[in-house]
Length: 390
Image 1 (cartoon, rainbow, N blue to C red):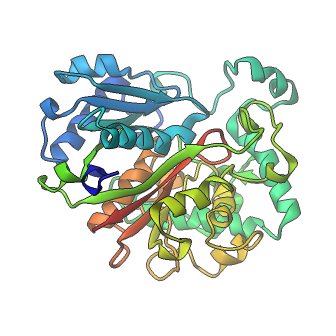
Image 2 (cartoon, rainbow, N blue to C red):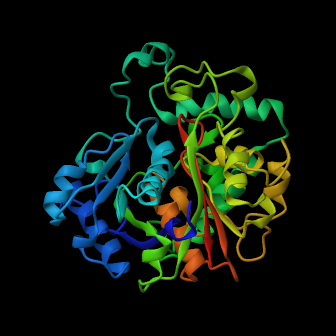
């Protein structure tokens, strides 16, 4: 691939973030259109420059309707990734990159909008399709229950404690306290508060589980050649991939029939090495990371599977302060993540990755030039990207 065709993120946009049910004067579709419009403006483009859309599973904001609502003249690309919720977040980015790098579209918007107060909550039991037959009879009605089984196994196999889960949650809240966009801005969380949180599904307490929020996010992707002429700093998508290991199927969200050696994992063991290889990097080259934190414990698994520490050592890694801003080895989830900023199926993590490399974060990592962003963990497909500033 010619260097000029390399995909870059040139614009980011979002709506306000509120608690569940907080947005009631506009529809989910409207706030998603607002986020897309903001991202286009941030890039210094107009709707006339956009010719593609990419999103992922369970999205009700159809690209054909978005084209009409925004006034996009020509639609050359429209794609949606299947799978478990946020696992498709960075997968949708990878499809947007594929579209512009192959020349099938010039400028593609990847987006997500959630107004859970206007429809069914993601945390509620609902229609689980065929594989619901394998989980509902056993009381696995919602994601905290489904993924708690994996986490219990992980904590049985390795020296991971509730103190280590607490560190992930407390780090996220500390970062959100500095971020005016975050739902938990200026709302401290103490260690005592954390341990007093009610059980949701052991080993997950209340503060181990992501927020339920309303909000929308979008990014604009085009080629490096076009990006050079735009106003935003050039943020290259060094690599972006998605996929799954063998035998996962619907994984913990539908079957719990993953291979035994992969059961207590994020389904990233095979993806992560390929992601770094495509970028020509190693974990040591990453300055900051945004790791999908729907549940605190899976962040610990991901730190190991993405190579930042060895198997079973993530507890010690976080206990040393390694994920804390500003002095940790690898500051993570610097906006507050989904535990304390907002739950927008991970696209808010991608926006924070771009802000870090632009130097615009409220918990800015000094001289950050590379950022890892993961999609949803413990699902199929899962996904990840490495962003790089030139």
